[in-house]
Image: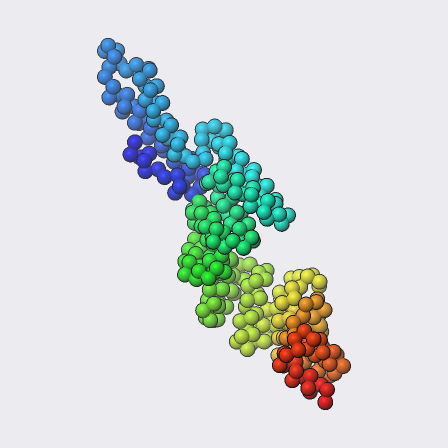
Length: 337
């Protein structure tokens, strides 16, 4: 049974491959059984007995079934453990969508216990562990999901994102390269490549990757925001403003993220559009929880737009938030003269 010894269920990536392995193994067993029964001496010259053939089958067949993991001959090729694992996975996903992360983790861990080869269960469990701030086990689960998926690009890309967030830059680079090689049309893979380039201060290369991602997926808020930040670092406020304005249009009036409003207001301020900047930064500040820096920028925009009263009010708020904020102290001195 040399062939069967070489079948390692831990290396099979998909259910189709496992079923194919089962078919091949059964064919191999059939050939082995024929060879085995022919080697048995004839009984009373009348050929091999039926009992002997059945014995050979009983010895060989369990060896095959033991190699196919969660796949068996019942239920049209799907074991009850597979069905149970998939049901638990679906329940786990529903719990995730309801933000019941602990319950989701319990259900998904049971799914994996029921069938260790359920790739989606591993991937979802990785997301739960990541949400629960357990990066190392999350990365292990996503690594398993990558292997079981046969190196699927979306799984590789997500694994790379986790590695990058955890500071495993080399592993993140490897995952990004493999993801792009597997699927050059996957926007998330190019976004990851851009994040890696930006981390190394290779801003032009990062922008090239971000533009590639946006050409594949125009609505990609995290990429648009990252590109705008690079434009600002490169002192290209017009490009930053154009990117942020396009991003803002993709949200409802009340749904624009605070960071988008803040950066848009700063870009307007840098371009000398003081009234627009004052209006945008005011919207941002009214969301609550404004930083001293934001309130200082609002005061500066109002001052340059000619609204001295509004500027004094904003700078007073900035100094309330942070009494030692140097730019606010300097502007306050100008406003009280």
